[in-house]
Length: 287
Image (cartoon, rainbow, N blue to C red):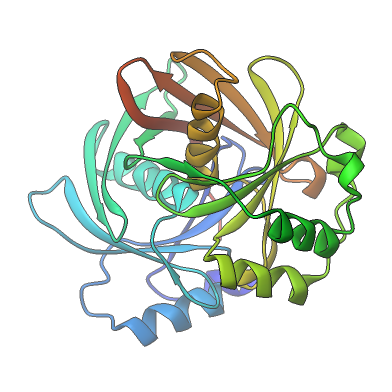
C-alpha cells in the first residue's frame, strides 16, 4: 500500500468512512485522457488497492467517463471508487450533482455537505436484477469458503444479484461464521470467473435493517474488499426482490470491521424506483 504515494497523478481516497484509516481505499486519477488500457492496469497494479478509478474526461464539467481497474483486470463498475472519486471532485468543484458514464451504464451521484463541513456522496445504481444460482455452484462456493451448508441462514437464500456488477449473495447464520473467513483463493476465483462474479457478498443480518457484510475479491487479485458499494447496491436489490425488507427503506451495512478498516454503507430503496442508492463518507488519504 505504501507504493501508492510514489505513483504520479494518482490521488488516494477512502470510501465509506470519514477516517482515512477506515473504509475502502481507492486510487483516483482525475485526468486519464492520455492513458491507454495497459497503462491504467499497470497503475492499478502498482497502487495495489482493490480498485482505481480513471476519469476519461468531462463532457460538461460535471459529467465524466470513468473506467475501473483492479490490480488484475478492468471491472464494469465499482461503487467505492465512485464514492471516492465523487468526494475528490466535490472538494474541487463543490457539492452538487455528478454523472459518471460507466461500462455498466449511467450512474448519477449527489455530493452533499454535512453539518461539520465534510462531504457525503450518494450514487444511484443502474437498474438491478436478481437471478437464481444452481445448487451445485452454491455447493462449490461453500467448499471454497470451507463453510458447512448448515451455517447458512435459510431466511436469506443464495442468489446472484446485479447492481452494476454480479455478486453471489451468501448469508451466514451467525456473526461468528461471518468473522471466520479463510478461503481457498484459487478455487473461489475459478468459480467466480465461471459465473462472471465480481465479489461474493457474505452477509449476516443483525436486525431488520442492519447487516454486517464481507466481500472476497480473488478475481481482482485481492483477498477481501473492505467496503463494496457495487455489492451493496446488488444486495439492496436482492433484499427487495425476495420481499425481505419494505419496498421503501434505508439499510445500514457494516463492512471492514474484521479487517481493521471499519466502514459504513447506507443503502436506500425507494418505492416505484428499481434503482438502489448507496451513500457514504470519504476522506483523502495522506501521502
